[in-house]
Length: 543
Ligand code: NOJ
Image (cartoon, rainbow, N blue to C red; front, top):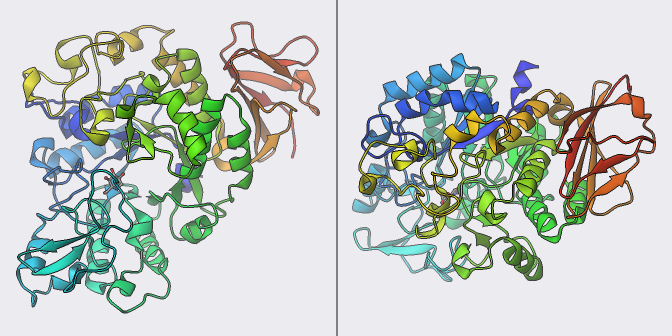
């Protein structure tokens, strides 16, 4: 089943410049990342997703690219990149990279050429209007920070469209030359050894730009098929992981049973998960899991707790969102864009390891492929003194030493400050101390990852939601090729127990549990502590 590797993968997202600085200039780099693959191996990671590492003015953490065929010089060279890919491969890890082609940086030579000359071949690579468009504030993605989605450019004497910040002009993907270039970019990185792409902002990427240029595009998803077909011709095992905050109704058009996007992040499920954690009941998550369409064929959902952006709660009702804010980020400074929280997982739970472990176990038990944000495996916190989403992107905390072991550079030369005070500071929270101690948070998470990797039922198989008559519990039965794994999670702060209607107790083998005395009691009762969890393997079962 090697071709379906992504279905049983453990994906770990890294921001290279914040991970490990090998040359002491204050910015993380590829040599440093390659050097720290031990840590990822110990955690059980099988696929590394790299946030953008391309040359960039870095006004949006590298999501503003000025050259698609290079490496930000502070992060290393193409040679360092290939060495890193090989080092990861040696340890059985694949690498996927961000494909950010909805927009470029305004510093990109294409945009510079486009704005400078109406007759430039690059003019139509962007979306221009001579007249001021109506409603230039429609569709703003970063409310409170971004002012418009169209901006007047004095050099071009025209208006250009930008879904995101004004320094990120949107590429005109209705232009065949732009689409050709996107494929060329993909081909380049595939040739350097990557196993696919996390595709940025997919709903905007396929937004029918033709409409904007008065030439309606009939099927906006056709571009996804084009990208997918190219990808599989170049590298059969490669995948596309879509960042698409879409409804479940829209999902089948994105997946096309894996013929378009191989994986799509489950943003709907993520928000219902946090609502469930805030309300201490599994009901919202259970409902959304029941409503979530099966991706079909080669398709797979990607599930996550936190990522490099805000925790986006924009799909919840205002009342639901307020409940999440009250539970996880009551201070207005923790909130952002009228919809989210710029906090890390551990700080949202105030470092409560019991609840954090339950959340991680849940992530790994959910049908789909789990994606982990670097630092969450040791329980790092955020730095609210940093602007916007930068708060959750502070340097990886390796040790209690200088700069948390991230860099030997003077403190004031770091790409971002390391968290050096408070309970989430590197003196208390760091990888070195946790890897030394068998009962640390890191080891608990690594054990969960190991349980997940030995449960292909979850990644490859189907799932039933088991009704145990208690809204505060989520019991899932994942099955594949005649084998079955049952996972149970207690969302409540009180101990719970339940029975499985059709299981004989002798058939259940505990794989993972937070309970020192084991989850199975005398009469077949399965007990869970407050915010507890357990994983059970069923032997000899045929389904
Ligand atoms: C989505 C990325 O996750 C986010 O970090 C970025 O700001 C926008 N796309 C724009 O590229």
